[in-house]
Length: 312
Image (cartoon, rainbow, N blue to C red; front, side, top):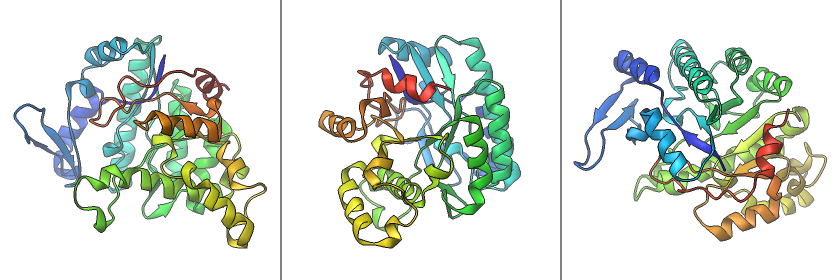
C-alpha cells in the first residue's frame, strides 16, 4: 500500500526555523494541555507540531501500523515561504530538500519524497527542482501560485519547462484561503482549502498549459477540490463561450483525465465519483497524515495509479 499524500519535517528544517524565527516570525504556542505546541509562521500559518511530524521512527511506525508499505513524503505547505524574500525561500528549500534526500537514502524501501522550491523565483525554482531530482527526489510540491500570480502566468514558464523536461511530478497543494468571508467556523480549512485547489486547477485546465507541457505529471490535492463535481458546468461554458474554449483542443472533461488526483476526500461516495469521472489510474491513495483532517488509514484499493505517475 502507498501513501502518496503525507508530510514530514526533518530535524534540520526545525533547526533552521529556530535559527530564522525572527525573520520568519515563528512562534511556538501552547493552545491546549493535551496537545503539542502549535507552530505559527508569519502570524498566519499555524498547525499542531505533532511528534509524527518530526520523529521519523514514530512516523514510519505509524505508517506501518496502517499497513502502508511505502510513503511519498511532501514538505508542509506552511513552510513554502513564498511570502518572504527570495533568499529565505531558496535557503529553506535547499535545507529541506537535502534533508529529505538523506531520509530517502536511509529508508529507500519505505520512503520517497517530493522537493520544495522557491516558486517566488521561477528560474531558481527550475534549478532547485533539477538539483533535487538529480539526488533522487520524485518531483515537487508547490502551492497554487506565488507572489499574487496564477500558475498559468508567463512568469512560471521556466519552472514548467524544466518540470516538463524532467517528467516531474508536480503536486499542487493549496494553502488556507484568505477570503475575508471565511474567517469563522474553520471555513478557511473546510472549504477554503479545496476552493484554492479548484481555482488553480480550473485556471490550469482552461489555459491549455497541459498541452504545452504534456510531460508534467500534475497531481491535485484533496481530489481536485470542487473541479470534478462541476466539470459539466465547465463543459457547457466550453460549448457556449470562446473565452472558455479558445485555448483547448478538446472538451474540459477530456483534460480532466490528464491530471492525477489524490483520494483524500473522507467520503467513499466522493472517491467513487472521482474514480468514475477521471479513471482509476488517475487517482492515487493518500492520507494527508499527520494533519488533523487526515484520512487514516488511506483508501488504497488501486496501485495502477501509482505505477502510472511514477513511470518515467
